[in-house]
Length: 97
Image (tube, rainbow, N blue to C red; front, side):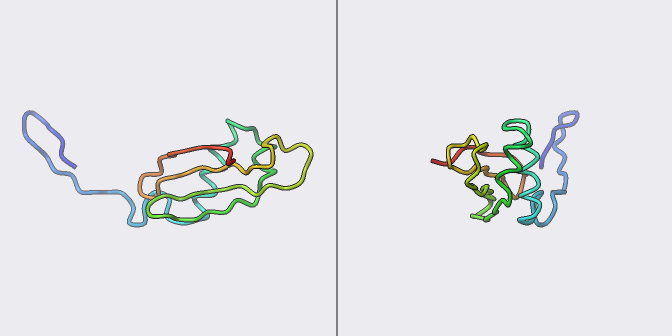
């Protein structure tokens, strides 16, 4: 990374973790759950447990499990969230069709 200080370019070493900020499936699932709760509510998010996490390139795709419960409001489609492994950025949130 380069920054400008008093007109001089200064290089800083890359300090991001070797495996990225979301290095494994367990961390991806935890990030997804915490991100989804404020959007869909604790009960709805917890009803889709367990969540699967698959790494495709640099993106974790985390998907809920639909159960045949009358209180699930997602019309039979699981929640899905895409998270960057290297930065931790949430890239996409959707109810899969």
